[in-house]
Amino acid sequence: MFSAEEAVGSQLPVHESGFTPEELNELLSFFESNEPVSSNSSSENSSRAIYSPDERKQRRKISNRESAKRSRWRKKRYLENLTNQVNKMNIENRRLKNRLHLVLNQCHVVWGDNEQLRSESFALWAKLLDLYWTLAAMQCNHDNSRHSLSCFNSNKLSSHSIN
Image 1 (cartoon, helix red, strand yellow):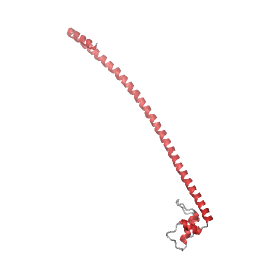
Image 2 (cartoon, one colour):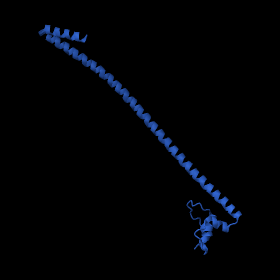
Image 3 (spheres, rainbow, N blue to C red):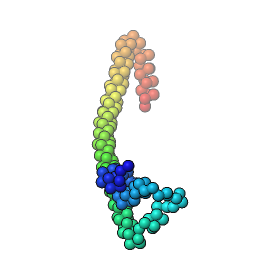
Image 4 (tube, rainbow, N blue to C red):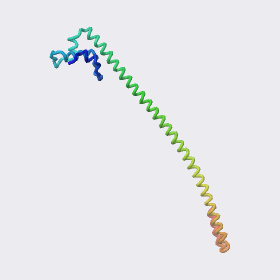
Protein backbone atom coordinates (compact mmCIF):
# COMPACT_ATOMS: atom_id res chain seq x y z
CA MET A 1 0.00 0.00 0.00
CA PHE A 2 1.17 3.58 -0.55
CA SER A 3 1.68 6.22 2.12
CA ALA A 4 -0.47 9.28 2.70
CA GLU A 5 2.34 11.54 1.50
CA GLU A 6 2.54 9.63 -1.78
CA ALA A 7 -1.22 9.96 -2.34
CA VAL A 8 -1.28 13.69 -1.73
CA GLY A 9 2.05 14.23 -3.46
CA SER A 10 0.86 12.47 -6.62
CA GLN A 11 -1.93 15.01 -6.99
CA LEU A 12 -4.71 12.49 -7.49
CA PRO A 13 -7.84 14.23 -8.75
CA VAL A 14 -10.35 15.04 -6.07
CA HIS A 15 -13.84 15.43 -7.49
CA GLU A 16 -15.22 18.16 -5.25
CA SER A 17 -15.31 15.80 -2.29
CA GLY A 18 -14.83 18.69 0.06
CA PHE A 19 -11.71 17.13 1.59
CA THR A 20 -8.60 19.18 2.03
CA PRO A 21 -5.18 17.59 1.46
CA GLU A 22 -4.71 17.40 5.22
CA GLU A 23 -8.05 15.60 5.61
CA LEU A 24 -7.06 13.17 2.87
CA ASN A 25 -3.80 12.49 4.73
CA GLU A 26 -5.78 11.82 7.87
CA LEU A 27 -8.15 9.43 6.08
CA LEU A 28 -5.27 7.58 4.45
CA SER A 29 -3.49 7.29 7.77
CA PHE A 30 -6.60 5.56 9.18
CA PHE A 31 -6.46 3.03 6.37
CA GLU A 32 -2.77 2.42 6.87
CA SER A 33 -3.07 1.96 10.62
CA ASN A 34 -4.19 -1.38 11.99
CA GLU A 35 -6.42 0.20 14.62
CA PRO A 36 -10.06 -0.84 14.49
CA VAL A 37 -12.48 1.92 13.68
CA SER A 38 -15.77 1.90 15.55
CA SER A 39 -18.82 2.25 13.34
CA ASN A 40 -20.49 4.85 15.56
CA SER A 41 -17.56 7.27 15.69
CA SER A 42 -17.86 10.24 13.38
CA SER A 43 -15.14 12.11 11.61
CA GLU A 44 -15.68 14.98 14.03
CA ASN A 45 -15.09 12.77 17.08
CA SER A 46 -11.95 11.25 15.58
CA SER A 47 -10.65 14.76 14.86
CA ARG A 48 -11.14 15.77 18.46
CA ALA A 49 -9.31 12.74 19.70
CA ILE A 50 -6.29 13.34 17.48
CA TYR A 51 -5.94 17.12 17.27
CA SER A 52 -5.66 19.76 19.95
CA PRO A 53 -8.26 22.55 20.01
CA ASP A 54 -5.83 24.98 18.36
CA GLU A 55 -5.06 22.48 15.62
CA ARG A 56 -8.79 21.85 15.06
CA LYS A 57 -9.39 25.59 14.87
CA GLN A 58 -6.58 25.98 12.34
CA ARG A 59 -7.87 23.03 10.29
CA ARG A 60 -11.40 24.46 10.39
CA LYS A 61 -10.09 27.81 9.11
CA ILE A 62 -8.29 26.09 6.26
CA SER A 63 -11.36 24.00 5.48
CA ASN A 64 -13.58 27.11 5.52
CA ARG A 65 -11.17 28.96 3.24
CA GLU A 66 -11.16 26.13 0.74
CA SER A 67 -14.93 25.80 0.94
CA ALA A 68 -15.27 29.53 0.31
CA LYS A 69 -12.83 29.22 -2.59
CA ARG A 70 -14.93 26.41 -4.11
CA SER A 71 -18.06 28.46 -3.55
CA ARG A 72 -16.53 31.48 -5.29
CA TRP A 73 -15.41 29.23 -8.16
CA ARG A 74 -18.95 27.79 -8.53
CA LYS A 75 -20.43 31.29 -8.41
CA LYS A 76 -17.94 32.47 -11.04
CA ARG A 77 -18.80 29.52 -13.32
CA TYR A 78 -22.53 30.15 -12.76
CA LEU A 79 -22.14 33.83 -13.69
CA GLU A 80 -20.06 32.90 -16.74
CA ASN A 81 -22.78 30.50 -17.84
CA LEU A 82 -25.44 33.17 -17.33
CA THR A 83 -23.36 35.69 -19.27
CA ASN A 84 -22.94 33.21 -22.11
CA GLN A 85 -26.68 32.57 -22.15
CA VAL A 86 -27.40 36.31 -22.20
CA ASN A 87 -24.97 36.77 -25.10
CA LYS A 88 -26.52 33.88 -27.04
CA MET A 89 -30.01 35.22 -26.41
CA ASN A 90 -28.99 38.73 -27.47
CA ILE A 91 -27.61 37.30 -30.71
CA GLU A 92 -30.80 35.28 -31.24
CA ASN A 93 -32.92 38.35 -30.44
CA ARG A 94 -30.96 40.43 -32.96
CA ARG A 95 -31.35 37.67 -35.58
CA LEU A 96 -35.11 37.47 -34.96
CA LYS A 97 -35.46 41.27 -35.14
CA ASN A 98 -33.64 41.28 -38.48
CA ARG A 99 -35.87 38.49 -39.74
CA LEU A 100 -38.98 40.35 -38.55
CA HIS A 101 -37.75 43.50 -40.31
CA LEU A 102 -37.32 41.56 -43.56
CA VAL A 103 -40.75 39.96 -43.26
CA LEU A 104 -42.37 43.34 -42.55
CA ASN A 105 -40.63 44.81 -45.61
CA GLN A 106 -41.85 41.92 -47.74
CA CYS A 107 -45.34 42.38 -46.33
CA HIS A 108 -45.22 46.08 -47.20
CA VAL A 109 -44.09 45.27 -50.76
CA VAL A 110 -46.86 42.68 -51.17
CA TRP A 111 -49.42 45.12 -49.73
CA GLY A 112 -48.31 47.74 -52.28
CA ASP A 113 -48.51 45.17 -55.09
CA ASN A 114 -52.03 44.22 -53.95
CA GLU A 115 -53.12 47.85 -53.96
CA GLN A 116 -51.71 48.32 -57.45
CA LEU A 117 -53.44 45.14 -58.69
CA ARG A 118 -56.71 46.22 -57.06
CA SER A 119 -56.47 49.60 -58.80
CA GLU A 120 -55.71 47.95 -62.14
CA SER A 121 -58.63 45.58 -61.58
CA PHE A 122 -61.03 48.51 -61.07
CA ALA A 123 -59.65 50.22 -64.19
CA LEU A 124 -60.08 47.02 -66.23
CA TRP A 125 -63.63 46.55 -64.92
CA ALA A 126 -64.43 50.12 -65.96
CA LYS A 127 -62.99 49.50 -69.44
CA LEU A 128 -64.92 46.24 -69.69
CA LEU A 129 -68.13 48.01 -68.71
CA ASP A 130 -67.43 50.69 -71.34
CA LEU A 131 -66.88 47.95 -73.90
CA TYR A 132 -70.17 46.30 -72.95
CA TRP A 133 -71.97 49.64 -73.34
CA THR A 134 -70.23 50.28 -76.64
CA LEU A 135 -71.09 46.79 -77.84
CA ALA A 136 -74.69 47.22 -76.74
CA ALA A 137 -74.85 50.58 -78.51
CA MET A 138 -73.34 49.08 -81.66
CA GLN A 139 -75.80 46.21 -81.59
CA CYS A 140 -78.60 48.64 -81.00
CA ASN A 141 -77.45 50.77 -83.96
CA HIS A 142 -77.14 47.68 -86.11
CA ASP A 143 -80.54 46.50 -85.06
CA ASN A 144 -81.87 50.05 -85.36
CA SER A 145 -81.89 49.79 -89.07
CA ARG A 146 -84.08 46.72 -88.75
CA HIS A 147 -86.10 47.43 -85.68
CA SER A 148 -85.75 51.07 -84.92
CA LEU A 149 -88.76 51.19 -82.67
CA SER A 150 -87.85 48.18 -80.50
CA CYS A 151 -84.25 49.37 -80.01
CA PHE A 152 -85.48 52.83 -79.12
CA ASN A 153 -87.84 51.39 -76.54
CA SER A 154 -85.10 49.14 -75.03
CA ASN A 155 -82.68 52.12 -74.83
CA LYS A 156 -85.38 54.19 -73.24
CA LEU A 157 -86.06 51.43 -70.71
CA SER A 158 -82.32 51.05 -70.02
CA SER A 159 -81.85 54.77 -69.46
CA HIS A 160 -84.82 54.88 -67.07
CA SER A 161 -83.49 51.93 -65.08
CA ILE A 162 -80.05 53.56 -64.76
CA ASN A 163 -81.49 56.86 -63.52
